[in-house]
Length: 452
Figure 1 (cartoon, rainbow, N blue to C red):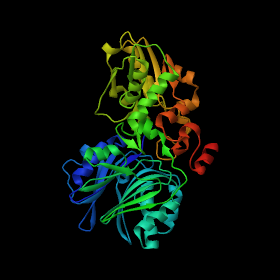
Figure 2: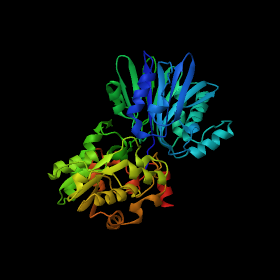
Figure 3: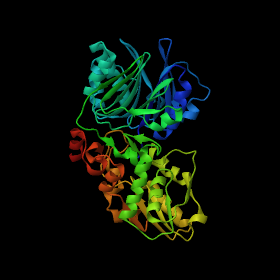
């Protein structure tokens, strides 16, 4: 599996380059293919972006400006190349615009064709550029940029958390379903919008609130909030299970607490005699701590992570993921040998990682390996910004649970069920998107795709 991206926007009384740099650093877990920023200075938008991690992209770089946006990317639409890195800038009759996007437009191809017929010229194959041209077109129609954003939202289907840089203003946008997180914070010197609250923490900026589903939040000389109402939000459950950093808070819910609850629920659902509770680092650690506390079985490390590699789930190609597993995690033989192990992970998508890890644990002397998975089996594609767009890649779609157990080589395998997941998160079931688990898509068009 791979995730989307992260967005950031800062408006300050001082230069924002350093703040954007450190803010993106704290959001690096959401995308590792490319990074970039755009700042407004002397009536122009200056951009720097490149392939690679934040630390390397911005080495020996400095841009002046008191207003800017930033982005780290993992491609869910568009190839992995420099042209598709963000922020993306366009020039049009209403001036210049920079945009950073986390999510995926379901109707991006359709919108792009319509825009091309009206004269839009595209330089990337991303849906982010589609959004930029759509907003520009609506701006020219309405004569007001923010109204243009609102008009564009009515034509867009899918997931999008956006930061837009227009002159000396930042416009933050969250789609009407609120699929992807977006938060707002401020202190005396600066206002910040970011994909996760951990970015605010890293900058020492107090959290104020989440950007609401369907909201346009304008950071300018004054703060302006425009709300496009909707009956319900549909935040992605996988943000809590895997994607978000454990110290983040999304829509008022602590990610750490959710993962600990998931571990406790796993123990209650499937206790087993063992000597050690351990985790696939880093995403399984918090759930493993919850399982250990509930069971009374000691928690300990069994796998050491090479922290100079990215997350295998969000590596673009399968061969990279398989190679990454071998060099990313190494067993601690002294902690494993002669023990019955309970191994906790957040999810099984393709089965690439867990099978190899079980082999490594057995080779290190584990007597038994019992696998417990926080997330229920993933059965359906995601159309809202996660790289799970074809159902034939899901191991749970091909095999029953006991068959998966045999396939990965575990002594036992238990997943949380959907009820335990909902209980752990603590949001009403109708306020979450769990389409990848139950096939119930918030947007009807995707329901039809699944049936077909």
